[in-house]
Length: 353
Image (cartoon, rainbow, N blue to C red; front, side, top):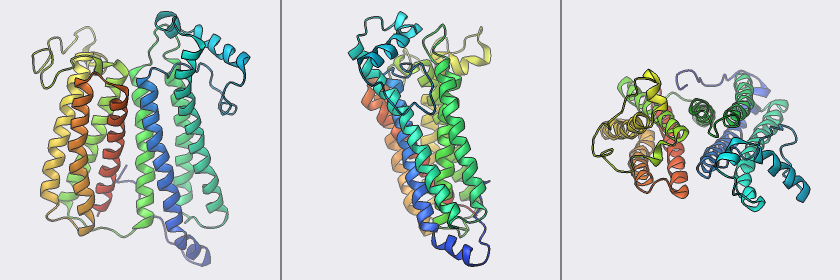
């Protein structure tokens, strides 16, 4: 991602002058959208942690803004949920009042996604039609809008995997959904930063490679965390650093699953995430220690933030594990992942060539 996003073309003429003057406004809009995407990831995490994600069994892209109005509509929607495997196998005790609680989080998650689309699309059209977007920027932002639309479809594709026989979504689809969210977030952040500071930073190659490695490790750890969420692996082996008294848990590898053990087998999934997170933290701290002395002045703040956040994030992850994933702490850990990724993108940006 970081290597493919280039500075917008400058062009010539009055329209280009108008676009150049609008750079801070376009950047502010993109940063606001990025903030909404970050909030969306956290809301999605809460939806998952509260087991609310399968409460809405209809996908209405246009009319989904409107919640159930009146008792009859609530009974209809609850009736649809009562037909799902999740209700029959796990939630048969639920009353309509209980259902409304889980419905809230999934409804908020979907409506927030639609709001992001509106907040992105309307200013995009306004900037485009008034000549306040540089020529090279329009295709990139149009593609980003399409990615957002695809993300909505991926979300529904994920939900449908939990509406069949087993009342749990596919960890592969969940990871795809989260990956797309982080990709969109990263492109939004990089593009906004590029508008605010289009000049090359001129950082030395070693620093660029180090920042790229950190961003890659953070991204990989996030993906490993998605498989933890998708397999409910966080509710097992609630000790640290050992797992059931061993560094590598017994039964780490399930021969029947083969390579799929890495993504579906709880002992392997949790082991991979916890130690990949530790490795990411150690590499990040080592990189910051080396880089902060020689990096350009503008890179020192994101570098120091990167070190602080990665240390806090590891602590949050361990606490979440030891306390068996309370909702508030799991949500905070998810927010920490978003913040760490965002600062890693910022760090890589300020250390670009």
